[in-house]
Length: 133
Ligand SMILES: [Cu+2]
Image (cartoon, rainbow, N blue to C red; front, top):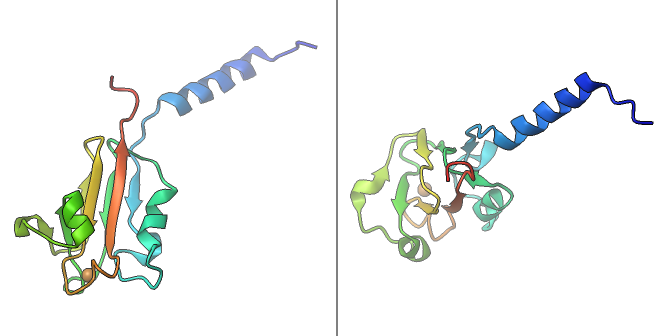
């Protein structure tokens, strides 16, 4: 019964190892085809982030119509209150690639008009890649 093809066993073992240890960085396009925009569903960006695992080395790619939206890197408190204390953290030219270099929460909002209060905001938890420690 134990007639394993040694080549096949080796092949499967290599696939498993590659899957476990390849820390291929992933680029996530925020909102997918909806991009960075006001959405009719208030939970849109919460849901968008909830089914993904963000890891150190991954990137977020924000795309929007210049002048219609912007992107600010904010603290948890600013995210909650839709405030911005550091105007220098606002990016206004699309597209914007954000490098997730640390295992922590990252918070983003749109600062234009009432867009943040209308839930154009994103929080992601970035996890350690599990290799570099
Ligand atoms: Cu906006």
